[in-house]
Length: 463
Image (cartoon, rainbow, N blue to C red; front, side, top):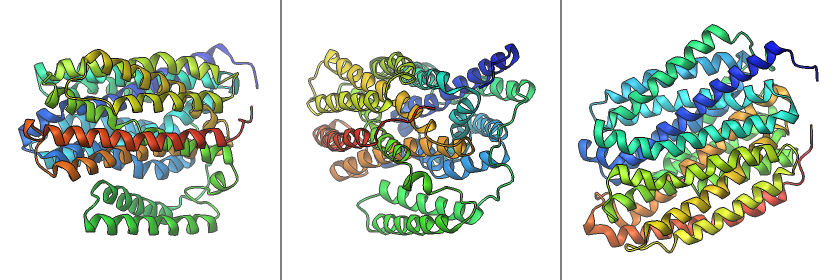
């Protein structure tokens, strides 16, 4: 590794700043909306399922486009895709704020998810491209911390914005950040990273992947409807065809060798998938619990929910730095074990549980998540050749978003089984509590499996 010049050091810091800002904006947009869902539901007269789709449409489009856009970034340039993604995010934030119906908001959130995929599919890859191995974990830890700062501020600021300025202000608040990133990227970032330049983009495989993932994830979210079962089956069949197709192509959109011959990469991604599948819906369910069952305002609910991401932010930067010198497998497995403890505690929530008990639980889950995420991401990004950094970053993002979508899908499915599409109210409080505890119990079982997947990956190879 050549010694860094002063200019390259400054460039790295500027790039890290941009990634920090975008890593803040994306989770803020997702988490702040959760606290505003009851208000949005009231304005647009939406049921429980429709309300959940305001959050899920963003996750769905992000998840299905991450892999193709990650590969496109490897070929055409990660900075270019990162720049365009921020333009899309900023423009759709303005349009979401101007929505006149629930359907319009859901559709625009879907488009916004594509912009998010372009940003998240390139951010960690750019960090990995510009930082040497011995500093990479620290930089990734800072990036992950910024994600959790966004998550930390989202319930609090989202609650205040919703209560005093209306839910639309959540989207307007992100626009200045987006404009700053767009300007700095255009004006000051001269480097470009396209390690797979010259390769042919696999359009056919990309279309098959997007179609199959969309069918699977949309169908999963609508179970147990007959149509949903068919869509899940079609999605799984299509993904099987996608795997066969990719194994035969010279320049596939996703190199299957990364999964078949790279155990560290495969099992680290599986652990990430399970981790997000068992944690993302916690904020969604507890937001409803605090407002509908305990009768708190959006502001007060947000101030309570801040405990989890604050703990994440504190721990993530420390664990990221530790992963540069310690085995990420052990660090992230310990993190998942702590999450299991928090999920078990959540199953004991009642209509009369104290706020103190809930805050302690959120802190436990946040500590575990912070201990897991940075080391796991460092292990994944350090396990592949640099020409696959974009697709590796996209795969990390896909596992995150697919896990989040599955988490919301499981929560929505259980809610639908107990409440149907009726609005959540005092009339259905007993049914809601049963559905929430059932969901957390499912998450406990899945997370225990995730601990074993995390331990089974083997030791990380050091760069």
